[in-house]
Amino acid sequence: MELFWSPASPYARKVRAVAREQHLEGRITERSVSPFDDPDALLAANPLGKVPALVLDDGGLLYDSPVICAYLDAIGQGAAMIPSDGDARWAVLRAEALADGVMDLGLGIVLDGRKPEAERSPTTVARWHGQIRRALDRMTDETQSLAAEVTLAHIACACALDYIDFRLPDIGWRSSRPALARWHADVADRPSLRATAPA
Ligand SMILES: N[C@@H](CCC(=O)N[C@@H](CS)C(=O)NCC(=O)O)C(=O)O
Image (cartoon, protein in one colour):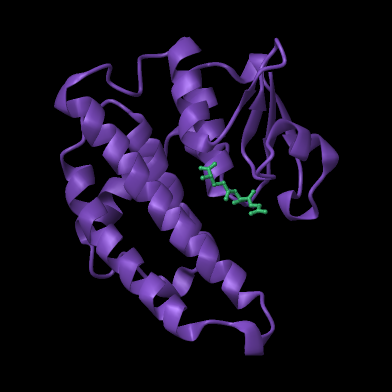
């Protein structure tokens, strides 16, 4: 399999960490690309032109990150990271959606900041900051009730928090959320996350 990724992408990191948790590194060739340059190989793998995108051994294509994570969890060697049914399944998928939402908002703020000043949208960005604050408050509650065993929710929430630290450190989410900070410190120590830190 071939995985298109980029070093700063929190979505691609989520996939790379799940691949490591599932002992699939040996079956995946990781190909780093700059998605905003629209490389032909990435566009062939994902018409949306975004990372992550996974090309299967039979040429099949998978995107986006929730789909790829579910696939790797299904074929992996480790314990299932997405419970197969019951409340636990929906809690994990909801936490992933919450984390992905934080990534979407954070990425939006970063991209807005790269525009010429006259083209930026401060009102929209202020609203996005409010959405991130609410989502992280909710993440504080959601992570406290997660199982001790690692799930996709652990990986997704850690990747979202690390992306905020990496790109938007002024948000300073830890000071008003000590329980989330303690939870994050434990999870962040996992080898799969240490090996995939954003760069
Ligand atoms: N929902 C997608 C989001 C992927 C995404 O936005 N990736 C960014 C990099 S962090 C990208 O490739 N952007 C390129 C573009 O928007 O043109 C997922 O979960 O995989």
